[in-house]
Image 1: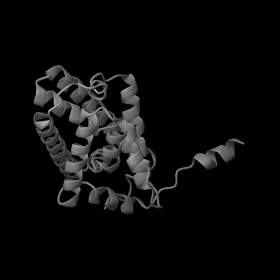
Image 2: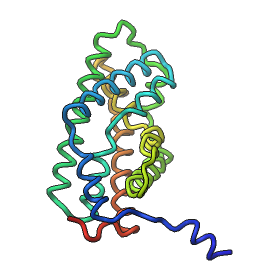
Image 3: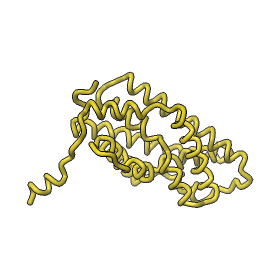
Image 4: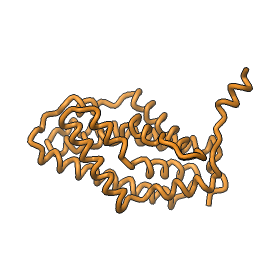
Length: 212
């Protein structure tokens, strides 16, 4: 019985070199990917503004922010400083674009009320840390699979990275700095937990070996 359970739980991954290539190819923010991020931020900001959860989820489904986070965790796991720097640079660009677009939207929006969807992103807790850890693990496991899958969009929903950052943009645009600081703290908690969890997962399942 125990052997059957172990067999069921066994993680089969693609070749570490193929995983290495897949991670590195998904880090850069430019061209189409940058435009997708811009419109994902716009959709998320609108969802927060009109207090509609389904619109926010739609934005998370198309958000491409997982690439640099996976890259940063992987870079730390294999001690690749160049990869870490590239991941941080691209993630920083994604954060900057998100803050600029969301702040601009809320500056121009006629309705500047702090909705419940915005306020829900201002109080990070232990449970948000658990969500971030789980998201980091699943993000690496999804990327390591041999077959194509749609787990990464699910990770985007579970970790909800985009709405807290858009809520920070709301706080900056409207002068609600307590909202901005709380939502930025939640975003930071998610990111730190995801990066640590992804780095540990890479080491545990052996994807740090034979990298190019």
